[in-house]
Structure formats: structure tokens, C-alpha cells
Image (cartoon, rainbow, N blue to C red; front, side, top):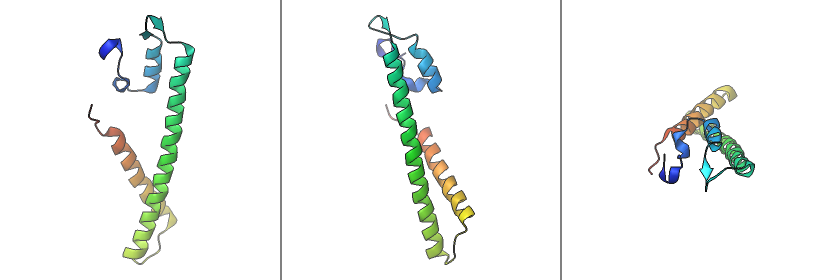
Length: 105
């Protein structure tokens, strides 16, 4: 537990564990109400939507880079299937490595 009896969110593996934990947390002697739980849910949904949008933007930029690189460096046209596969692999690797990166506290 962190200071003041609060558990840091990063100690939970899943968001559902965090939301279930909110049922047991007491703030100032009172349990969190429905508004606090809805606030957490709203923040989670907004973060999820933003992550999807940023992932799509990164995918399209990576696809553009792969297409331009094959046109310039190899003087060949890129098949759409191979371009999408390579951009998807690079995008997935970047997103996963960003999620696994250790943050300095």
C-alpha cells in the first residue's frame, strides 16, 4: 500500500481489479460513491479511445514510411498485403514495448 492507505494503480494487473478495489477503499472515512466509480470508468474509456486513435495514426505513418522506403530503396512497388503486415508488426512492437517500458518513479 502507498502512503495514506492508498494502493497505487500500477500494482493491479487488470483494470477490473482496480475497479473492484474501489469498492473497498475508503476516502475520509466514507466509501467511494457511484460518481467516483463513474469518473474512473470515464477516464478509462477516454484513454482507451485515445490509444486506439493514436495506434491507427502510427500505423498509417508506418505504412507510409514502408511504402516510400520500398519505392526509393528497392525501386519496386509494394504489395498491399506485405505493406500492411510490415506496418502492423512495427506498430504492434512499438505499442507493446511502450507498455512494457519501466517508468521512473
